[in-house]
Image (tube, rainbow, N blue to C red; front, top):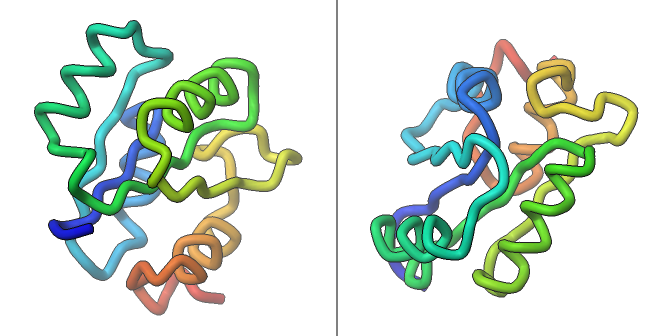
Length: 115
């Protein structure tokens, strides 16, 4: 697997929540919900996802589970990250907890978030 890693999230709020914590550049793609077959194929092709390390971080709800299943089928090499079910949404996950999750998957996190 070559190329820069990419993270896939559901919404812009998730992207902003993650981006502010990162001490590295990372391409983050928002799906804006579940994807149809055509849109999924476009996403894979446009971002060359078959050839890059891919991380999936979606909400712990019905639409998040549905999206995760789509990616398991289309991108079997992707690494799936899971937030605590208590928070249900990536955007609602407390910063220190999300920072630990990202750091444990080798993402560089700004020290201020590692409390």
